[in-house]
Image (cartoon, rainbow, N blue to C red; front, side, top):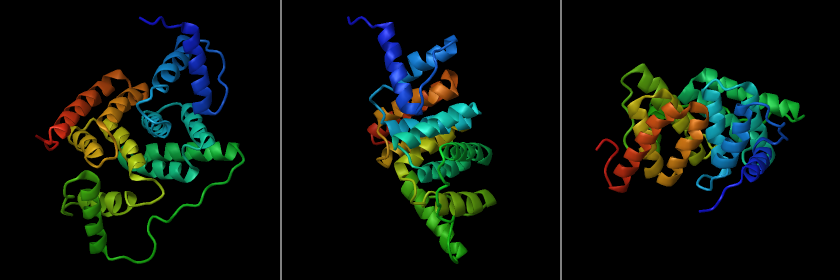
Length: 261
C-alpha cells in the first residue's frame, strides 16, 4: 500500500488553489482554512474525472446558490477568467441561467460578483446579446420553446395551459434562454443540475440528470464527480440525495429504461 504524505498533500492543495483562484492564498490559520487547501483543492479539484471548466461552473453556481461568502464567489470568478476556462460573456450567461434555476436573487448575486472582479482587474463589462431582437409571433415562440424543451430534455415540453408553463417554461426558459448561443449546452447543463439539486424537487432532479446523460452532455461517471464537487458548497446531507438520484438515473439510462421506469 502506498503511504501518503501530509506535506505533499498540502503542497498540491496550495498549487491547485493558486491555479483555480488566481491568487496566492495565505497560510491556513484554522481547521476550516486548512481543509480548503488539504481536501477541497488537494483531493477534490485534483480529481481527473471532471474537467476544470466544469468544476468552475459547478462551484460558481453552488457557491452563489447557497449564500456563499462574496469573496468565495469572487475567487472562483477571478480564477475562471484568469485561467481562460470561462469568458466574461460566458459567465454572464451562466448568471442568467442560474437566475432561472435558483432564482433571480441568486443570479443577481453571481452577476454582481462578475462585475466586481472585472472592475477590480481594470476590465470593461462585456457586450451581451439582447434577450430577443425584433418582432415575434407569440405562438411561434411558444412552439419554439416546446421544441427546445424536447431537444434539451428528451421528451415533449408542457402545453401552455398555465402562466407558469406558457410565460415561464415555454416562452422564456426554453423559448429564449436555453437557445442563447453565448454558452454551450453542456455548460448550461452543469448550472441547471446545481439549480435542480438545490430545489430538492424529485421530478426536476431525476429528469434533468437523466437528460444530461441522454443528450450526451455528461457521462454517468462525470455526474458521479458532480456530486462530490456539489457537496463542497451544498453539504454532504443534501449531496446524498443527489447521489441517490444520479445512481438511479444512471442505472435506468444504462439499461435503456426511461427516467420514470
